[in-house]
Length: 399
Image 1 (cartoon, rainbow, N blue to C red):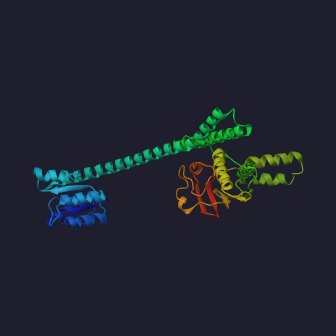
Image 2: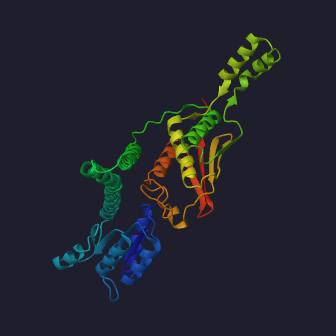
Image 3: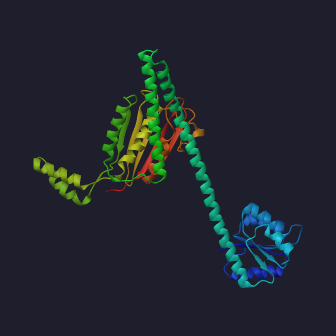
């Protein structure tokens, strides 16, 4: 039911309007006779539309009140007026009203004018929201391009500088210096390659081009193997302590009796093989996208190692609940400053305490998108100088 505020200084006419509107299915929350009262009621009640008499009692006219209301509250106004002279209509037109109704008004005309005004206002609101969204997107794209260009500029400058030194002074410098310049070039090129990969991942996720391919996955085995891979890649600078609680893979209850019968005769080789086959066939593995999950956990675990002192262990826990898997990564590293926490998942945002630790600020924004593609959620708690804990929860759907 739409609320319509009636602003009319003729009491009998105002009551007639209210009665007619209520019979027509509208609600009239208030009737006022002064422009100042109209502004107060409009701000307090925020009606869907205001029927405003052009000439009101007091110092403020209906036209002045309507102009003030529209600038403050963006509420559509339809004028009621007994004056059809050019001067009055010109003044009213400047306030961009949503319609006019001349007194004495025709009831059908009044309803038609109100409906047209409400529809026009809805369309204008939708258009304004779309324009605001488009403006925001343009600003974000512009910022994104600017930040990408800035991130590429530093390693590219390093490559150019090192190359020029080799070209100009190549015959005058020793092998160790040449090797140093070549290492600078290699490191900068690797940094640019990693940045380009992350930018492409962000672009694919924003354009919904990342394929989400859930398939049966043995989560415990996956996490154990991933832990070993990361420890190997980071040269075991920090131990990852992995623990699992619960079972993410479940047995099909319909085959429990078959399994129990075969377990009594499991000494027979044929029976043992048959038992293994049945258990594997009846295991219900959760459906997850291994590629995206690998990116999520690899990023969080390598970050935990990267921002922790050498030798400080990182805890990695998997909780398999009835309907979700929860991954918890805990470190005792530098922590995230409170002032940076609100923007942590924004693209290119890097915390102010990272110093010279390499990174481009894209990793966590990608992680968040990949978690959401699984229908999951990512949260964290952190204190600067104490450490950080990330928690990723993903709903489980069994195959």
